[in-house]
Amino acid sequence: DAGVTQSPTHLIKTRGQQVTLRCSPKSGHDTVSWYQQALGQGPQFIFQYYEEEERQRGNFPDRFSGHQFPNYSSELNVNALLLGDSALYLCASSLSGGLAGTDTQYFGPGTRLTVL
Amino acid sequence: DQQVKQNSPSLSVQEGRISILNCDYTNSMFDYFLWYKKYPAEGPTFLISISSIKDKNEDGRFTVFLNKSAKHLSLHIVPSQPGDSAVYFCAANALGGANSKLTFGKGITLSVRP
Image 1: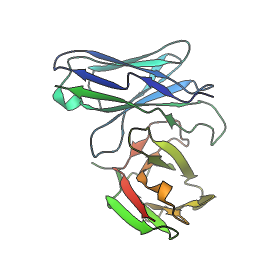
Image 2 (image 1 turned 90 degrees about the horizontal axis):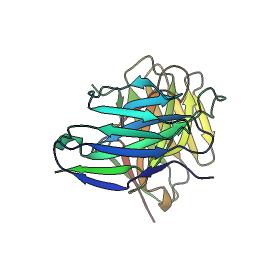
Image 3 (image 1 turned 30 degrees about the vertical axis):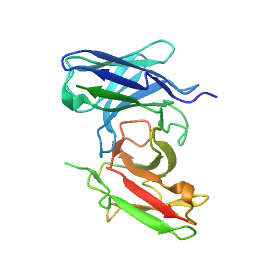
Image 4 (image 1 turned 90 degrees about the vertical axis):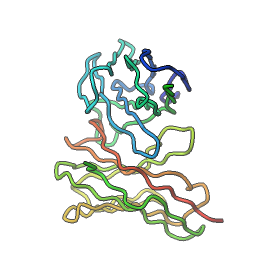
């Protein structure tokens, strides 16, 4: 049973560029959440997708956008990259409407984004 | 404004002894709490969780205690093993389940000495 997968593993971009990160959820999961983890910090919630729509959003600017596809996989897009966007981007998947204890969020290995 | 606080950045314990990792929160709306473990170059791995209707949850060597009046929870690892050396994150959410937005602390680096 494949867990959460993310691609690419590492990425280097320059300021002002745009980036797309990808996530495939754990088999059977229908909900994808994205988090940003800066160095020395805990993960910070960006947004969550369910049924191809953004269901919740954290305190991130509109430069951060996402998409969920019919197969539940998801993309995170960041426009007009800033130096401060350098971080580990984590994707987590879960099952909405599942029994208590089955809706835990499971994380992928992350994509390390460096903005120069 | 840190709603989940892990005030000790690191902890070192001897193999076989107990590890106690602490976490405080400020948001009274939080009603579900989780602990994740993270190794370098890997994503966080779910360890154990507790609902606010309980004050203790146990899973093997891991036990989480919740003190709602103090807005404090702790993770106990007994006995500690060298493979437990990792960064441990405390996380919390509201709305009665683990599915909604998680708010994380900064993490505690645990080192278990052989």
